[in-house]
Amino acid sequence: MRLLYPIYTTSTLTTFTSEEWRAILEVSTTLHHNGYRKLALRHLDGTGTLTDTELVKLGRRAYVPQWVLAGYRALVKRRAPLSKEEYYDIGVKTAGTLMNIRRILARESPHLGTHGDFDAFLGSEIRKRFGSQLAALEAASSQFRAASEDVEDEEEEEEEDRHPTPGTTAIAMDTSTGMEMKTDSPVKASSKQEAKEISELEEEIRRLRRELEDRIGELERRKIKAGASDAPVV
Image (cartoon, rainbow, N blue to C red; front, side, top):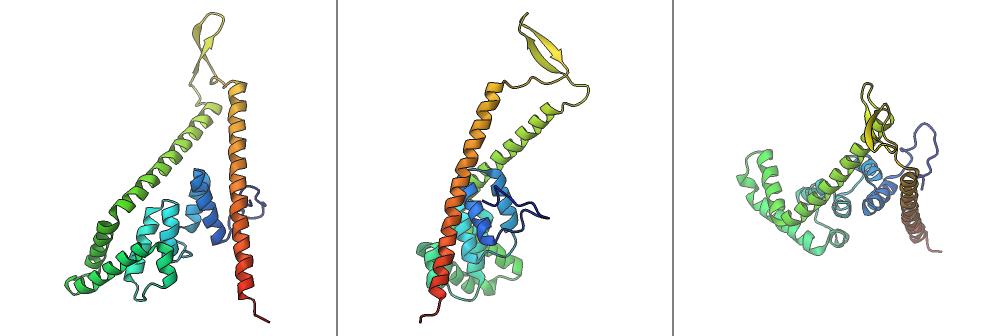
């Protein structure tokens, strides 16, 4: 909710926790709110706040293939075995496949000369076994990028309409003669169309608010439950 109703101090974005940004990313991905999605990705990407299994889980849900791939690589390369919780988090089948890749790497590593060869071999093994999954995630991610670019193009066109380049003219129709005529300002959208667009935007914002309220409420309940479980037994 603080994303929709920010408190304007020196910054409105740095007050969100990593967990809140994760919730924003999931909700905005579900509702195809690309602006909020890009914002959440920017705040989470490369921060080191996501664990290896969180990279896999959140990357799958939010269609971020580079996170999933990074999580797989990290889980294979680390020395510690996967815990029972991690097996359940990423899926038993996925965990088993990663452990199989780890065994292959242990067997082949003496034959891999440089660190670059090792990473290339690891990447090829992951792609070989998770190729279809990663391809699906990459396709979905591309759709989000394309949609975001379309929105940006539309915003640029709207800005150009509001502030036309000097020396350019717009074409309008003279309703009395049925002939085209040049004007110094772009053709304005009808008030009916504007009202419809505003109504659709307001409804979209209301949906996002409800989703964020539900998600943040769930996070609060988890925090309360976690605090209760950590309390000492009297």
